[in-house]
Length: 321
Image 1 (tube, rainbow, N blue to C red):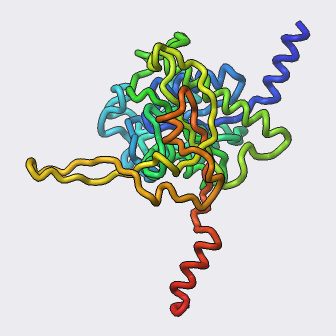
Image 2: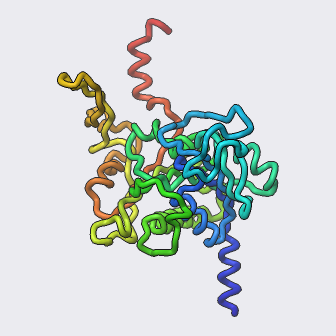
Image 3: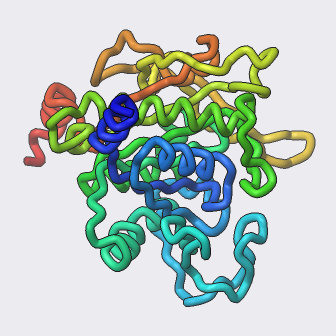
């Protein structure tokens, strides 16, 4: 009895307010699994995510220009003619919005929370887990999951982008279960472990991450999708967004067909290190070469060059200033 009371009080102390979004849609399995498990962990969670698939929209800020949906949402879970935003009939903490991931977070902050949850102060924004990895600088600018994350950081909020290797876009009503080998459940378990560790380390600090800082997290193939089902509890590895094995898209042209395509190439610029710990592996290297490992990269939104680089360029242009 005393132990139960102590556990309840301990959970209450660490209960935090979390705003969630993604780019795969509010009905995707991964985000529903994490929403379920964060709530079960004692946190207060509000989800505001796109009604449709918005992968690859980056940080674009797109809002609906009609009050109703002009097309069906992802999986047909919301249909043409439904309101452009709304919540689940049986759970008012789960909202959809006909916008991009970045605008979904803003809609949550500027409309949903003030209007319906006035006592809710966001401690952390969690985007994902994405269905598919987001590795390297190319996906940093192109991923809707990461776009929602750095937009959250722009607004002064601690934020995490979480991406997983299970790239199949699945409907939670078809795929969400309690199977411990289900990748969505393991992705959620890994995410909760990381989030809880951050909150535990926060202590009496007012913020869980420094101002202007976010995390990019990439989880490997796990559970039934890993080799022989062997990866069920991946270790965490600190990584860099850039570095060895980071690649960038490049156009190819086929002389025979006259068509263009894309390929990925490694460029020296992506291996050049100016900031942070240059000895860390790139998140791409962790994903490709480290067995059963989750890459955790720290980024900042101060995109200005270092003082040394600024001085070099100022020297080149000194006659103009």
